[in-house]
Image (cartoon, helix red, strand yellow):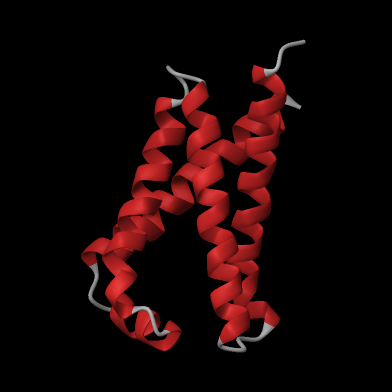
Length: 118
């Protein structure tokens, strides 16, 4: 289980650093956020994604941060899935957000279980 937890955490860190930095640095993401009707939230979303990834990294030194970071990222991805449902995207377009939601929910559940003791 520890390997799955660490793998999920590493995957989440990589994905959110990539997507978060893309939101912050690449103007090409404007079109995507305009399609969602959320252009004004692009930089906030990117900042939250990078903050969540950094929180997961910092969790190696301060384990309670994993709970906060994975909880925040799970909530962010839940909102992402709901936005895609609202704009009627096909399921295949929702899969990345849905997968990251499941991954971060797993990390959150594992971290909570670990923090609650043996």
